Image 1: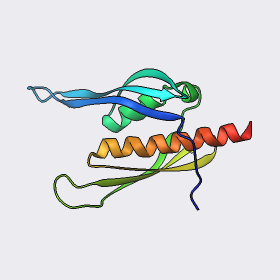
Image 2: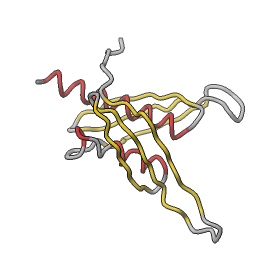
Image 3: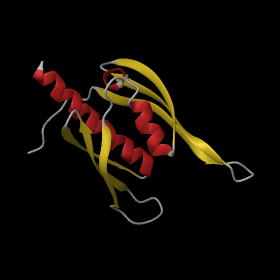
Image 4: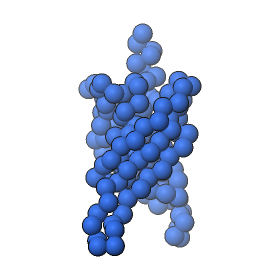
Length: 133
């Protein structure tokens, strides 16, 4: 049976940028996000090796995770509908303080589905931490 959790972290707005310039030089991926943490809004920005890396680094800058950020152990993605606009389901395992948490996200965009899965795992981490208090 799935555990019910309160959504304490929620992405309000986001923008991911990456690519190559006209000379073929890679432009570093950047994530700019407005994240609600317990009702307050934090604006975070991070660069990464790719959009997913930048997104994870940005979310790890939010208040609860600055000191001891979680990290992704395993990530899988599967297409659940056909076509060029088909939906993708991302499942991931995230490690934090010796425990494993699971997240799942669904979207027509790979990075967005990954973001939803990571945010679900972050919320489970926070829920567990607050239950221990």
